Image (spheres, rainbow, N blue to C red):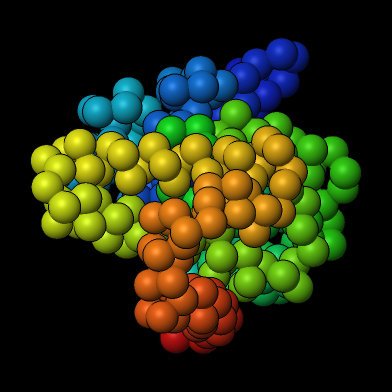
Length: 281
Ligand SMILES: NC(=O)c1ccc[n+]([C@@H]2O[C@H](COP(=O)([O-])OP(=O)(O)OC[C@H]3O[C@@H](n4cnc5c(N)ncnc54)[C@H](OP(=O)(O)O)[C@@H]3O)[C@@H](O)[C@H]2O)c1
């Protein structure tokens, strides 16, 4: 396979990034990188199942729509696999002979292990697995990173550098990736339900909906930052708010009565269990 030196990251050039399957997650990642100004849209190639989708992204984000996964993969320095887990086998078969060891394949697929990808590629391509989440779009994402058998430290660092502008990045052993998927990839959906319900409570006690939603969302954001920035245990931070015989303790009593804790724990366990099954379908 002939490589184009202008496009393959040689001599200070920005890397070309091919996003194979630029759906919801792919678009969120691109928007995060564009907001951070860490990728050049002219060097982002996108593919999708339907050309209408890739053309729409090309028009709205000024990236390049490419018709085939093979062409996109061949032109990229970093190939970002973003299709559904069930499509992994088909897309890997399409691109395997286009890849070489100087490229980096990053997969954000739930359920699909680096071993699965390597067995299908049958060649020595460095594979890094990243599990991001949708808040990457506003650069408050959480990404877990691990490497396959051919990924060296430089490849892991390259992936970490790519995802760091989108939020936090943690290197985590691959055996925990289904758990990460259940917690931080699915987690934003669980928290949107919490925010929606808190806002509904605000509406119930007379607040306009937009005000209630802003109060609920900013309270979640603030509480999250308190946990991350003070390093205090969430229970201690909760105790700071809960004055004796005050109003908060009455609310907490209701949460306990409704089984909020057990429900959230079970939500993570269920999502983790499901995450391990997706690729088998
Ligand atoms: N969504 C999340 O919060 C999240 C978080 C972490 C990881 N992930 C992972 O990200 C991946 C994508 O999830 P998603 O939510 O973004 O799903 P999605 O919106 O359905 O995106 C999948 C994209 O793949 C495209 N596609 C289908 N067949 C293709 C093919 N043969 N070649 C190229 N593209 C093809 C689809 O195109 P069309 O739109 O034209 O059909 C679609 O745009 C999944 O593996 C998931 O596990 C998602």
